[in-house]
Structures are given as structure tokens and as C-alpha cells.
Image (tube, rainbow over all chains, first blue to last red; front, side, top):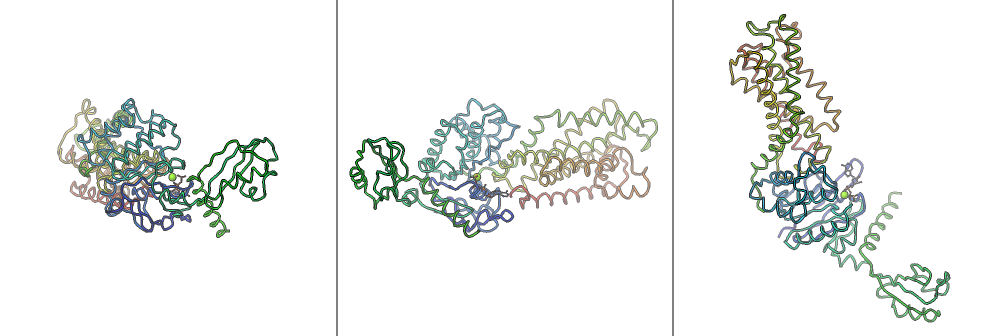
Amino acid sequence: MAAAVSIQGVHKHFGALHALNDITFDVPQGSFFGLLGPNGAGKSTLINIMAGLSRADAGSISIMGHDVVRDFRMARHSLGVVPQELVYDPFFTVREILKLQSGYFGHGAENKAWLDELVETLSLSDKIDTNLHDLSGGMKRRVLIAQALVHKPDVVVLDEPTAGVDVELRQALWRFTKRLHDDGSTIILTTHYLEEAEALCEKIAILNRGEVVALDSKQGLLSRCPYRTLHLTVDKKTDKLKELLPEYLQLLLVETHKNEISFRLHKTEHQIGDVLEALKNAGLIVVDLYTEEAGLEEVFLGLTEFVSKETAEVAG
Amino acid sequence: MKAGSRAYGFYALFAKEVVRFLKVTVQTVLTPVVTALLYLLVFGQALEAHVEVYEGVSYSAFLIPGLMMMSIIQNSFANSSSSLIQSKMMGNLVFVLLSPISSLEFYAAFTLAAVVRGVLVAMAVYFVAILFIDLPLAHPWAIVTFAILGSAILGALGLVAGIWAEKFDQLSAFQNFFILPLSFLSGVFYSIESLPAAWQTASLFNPFFYLIDGFRYGFFGVADADVGISIMVSLGFLLLISIVALVMLHKGYKIRG
Ligand SMILES: Nc1ncnc2c1ncn2[C@@H]1O[C@H](COP(=O)(O)OP(=O)(O)OP(=O)(O)O)[C@@H](O)[C@H]1O
Ligand SMILES: [Mg+2]
């Protein structure tokens, strides 16, 4: 079975900037794939090349086995892209624009039921005859999503669909993408909300400065950070809490605040029991505690900051 | 879903380009018709008594085909060029670029829509003008041929300019320093026979001259150049511009970064 998206040695330059440097990875069919990375990492550039909106300087990409340049028709039939920018055509209403977009993909009246369903699921029914110019940002975002799906693509790419979107719409979009995924589509999502990626994505690629710095399952990535945070509340309220602790605990300390303390503990090397014991010996009684597992955010920052420092050293 | 019909994809883009200008008919059809009729009124009135270009043809009658072709030239160019630059600047050209529409279909849709606009404006000028002025129809086939050739050439040229231009300024520069002078110097208001010899020769290098001359032949049965040559030159020009447009589209010049 061909990969949903297969990226082979892709390079892209913008003048002196090496925006994509030898990107190679596959997105398996049916996966929910996260494409993460800081601003300017090259995510949108890579998506543009997938979509044929931009051309790679070297390397190739195929969608469902169809090369995006040589076999552009089939590749584009297989791909639906929700662009990052809120672009729209102010000449048309929602109904007109969906009919047009479906037409560009060669579909006529036979596609009406699907368009109606999209309008319904994306809660656009009220605005169906409204000119795009007069829609709110969130509504325009929904129309962009509907436009990307008019031809029932196998692979759906959403470039930061939840940026600047309210809580309700964000949750609606999550439900909607999950449903698309359950119905068999491959989803590629870029987002700066790492909880979102953590909740939705099974597999994740992290880009930084045009390079893939991680490509792993979500579990694999999370296990790269073997630390957890222990938050404690003790019975003494004092600004001098830190001085009361034994030296080895001071090294693990993240912060203290009045009677609250948090420690960063290695999952295997540090035992919570030892910490509690040491606190007791220091005359502190623990009244409450909870632990926090490392999230994607921590892994992400570790990976992208590390690489940035390294590149900075090489450069400077 | 299985891939849709290719012909329908082309048709959808063509229809969109037509609907786009029909949504603002005042600006895209009415205004140019009024402009052409104003020229007719002013120049016709002023020169009627003094100029007879072809024997037995009043100056106003002589003027009508020239003004019709001028409307075709300006409006066909404006249709594809302004649609493209707007889509580029608004960013909504991506919706077409994301679709499986090929370079050839893209070219054909924009050019044909420009033909529709050019021919529509020219017909409107014609039907208003003949209410007041008698106009013969010597060779209707030539009228149709040159109307289509002219609007297709300018539609394709508008496509090239629209792809090339990054700002409206550049587009209006193209219009004001290239399209407008060439159309005025091509014999809209006069026959090149009345020009000094040097200007006559210069006109022979102006492709718009052949469009207007051949078009006028369709009405009066007389022309400055041989109508066969006018057709050949116009076809050659259309071919040239179309190749330029297709190569630009195929390479994704300025639109597929
Ligand atoms: N058309 C272009 N011309 C010049 N530079 C560009 C162009 N498009 C992108 N870049 C540069 O390439 C780099 C990658 O940009 P890209 O938009 O792919 O980042 P991104 O990962 O999508 O970032 P964000 O999270 O901010 O959307 C950036 O440094 C950007 O400035
Ligand atoms: Mg981006």
C-alpha cells in the first residue's frame, strides 16, 4: 500500500534561505499525523509543495502514490488543503463558492448531496447565501474547510486550522477532524497548540529550521522526556522553604511558592517515597500532592531549543 | 471519490470568470459602452462634415467598427488581467491552483471568458449605435472572425500581464503605455491611408491595426490591408501570446512559487 504522502529528499530555497533541507518521511494511510515546528520552520512551505502551490528545488512528493508534478491531476484529486491564511473570493456567496470549487474538481449536480452535508456538519446553513466578505473569521475558516473537502479527498491537510478560533469552534473542528479520520481519511495537522497535537495525533514530525528533528509516534516522543513534575503542599507557609530542604532535593527543585513546592523527578532514578521521607526529616508535613507527566510541549521545546542552540553555535 | 470530468473543471472556471464580470455589469459592460458612445458622439459630430474616409461612408459610420474593436481590446484585456491580479492579491487564486485544472484549461477558461466580455461590450455598442446611424454589414464572417481573434488575443495578453504584474500599478502601466497607445495608433479614428508614409509603415508593425482593419472590412467591404493577411497576422499574434501564456502557466511563473 502506497503511503498517503511520501516525501523524498525535498529541498527548497528562498534566496539565501534554505527553507527545507532534505526532508524525507512518509505519512501512513489512515493516520492522524501532526506536523509541528516553531514559526518559520517550513511547515507551510512543505504543505505548499505537496499541494503543487510551490515547486521543490530537488526531491519529490507523491500523494497516494501519485507524483505531485508528473501526475498532478490524480495527486490533487487525492488531496484537500485548508490553507493557513484566511483567503476568500469576495465576489461569491458560500453556496456559489462551494459549487465552483466542486466544479473545479470536475463535479456537477451529482455532488450536491455531499456539499449539503458539508454545509450541515460545518454549521454553515445559516450563512449559505451570505457573501464571503461578510462572514466572521471563524465562519470563513469553516468555508475554507468545506472548500478543501468538496472532492472527498483521501488526504486532508489542515494548516493551523485552530489559530484565532474560539473554544467552541475549536472543539467542533476537533470533532469534525476526528470524524473524517474515523471515516478513513488521512489527516495532517499543523498547530502551535501542543495539547491539541497530543490529544489528536498518532504520529508526529517536528520540523525546525527546515529540517526534520523528530519523527515518531506520539508515545515514542513522550517517552523521550523521562521526567515528571511532583507538586507538593506542605504545612509551613514561609519564604525560606528552600533553605529547609536537604541539598540533593534543592537540585531537583523547580520552584517554591509560600507552602507549595515542585520538583522535577526522573521517572526511574528518583522515587517519590524518598522525597517525602526527606521532607519529613526536614520537619515538613505534606498535606497535598500531585504529579504531572511531561507533555509534548516539553519534548518539543527540548528538541527545537537544542537544535537552535546547536545551529547558533555552528553559525556563530 | 472518483476523479470528476475534466471538461467540467474547465467549464466551472470559465463560468466563474464570466459570472465574475456579470456581477458588476455597470463597471464591466455599461461603462465601456457609454465611453465608446461618447467618443462616437464627440468625434462623429466634430468631424462628420470634414472627413470622408471611404466613399459613401459617413465618418460616424466609419468610426463605429473602430470603437467596437477598441472596446474589445480594452475589455478583453481588462477581464483576464484584473481578475488574475485580484485573485493573486486576495490570495484566492490558490483555490484554482489546488484543483486538477491544467495550464491549458486555465488558459482557455480565462481567454474564453475575456472573449465573452469583449464581444458582449462590442455588441452593446453596435446595437445602440445602429439606432442612430446606418451601418452596412458587407461580410459578417469577417466581423465574427476578427471580434473573436481580437478578444482572444487581448484576453491571452491580459493573462500574461496579470501573471506578470504584482501590483495594480504595474497593470495600469501596461494598459496605459502599451494597450492604449497601440489601440489609438491602429486606426480607430482614421484610415492609415491618411497618414504620412512613415506612420503608415509603422502601423504595419502594430498588430492591433490588422484587427481593426479586418473588422472594418467586415462592415464596409473595404480595407487598408488585404483581409487574408490581417487574418494571418492576427492568428500569428494569437499563437505567439498563447504560447507565452502557456509557458508561463506551465512553469508556474510567479503563481506557483
Ligand atoms: N514565498 C516566500 N519567499 C521568501 N521566503 C519565504 C517564502 N515563503 C516562506 N518563506 C520563508 O521560509 C521559511 C519557512 O516558512 P513557512 O511559512 O513554511 O513556515 P511555517 O513553519 O509554516 O511557520 P508558521 O508556523 O509561522 O506558519 C520562513 O523563514 C519564511 O520566511
Ligand atoms: Mg505556516
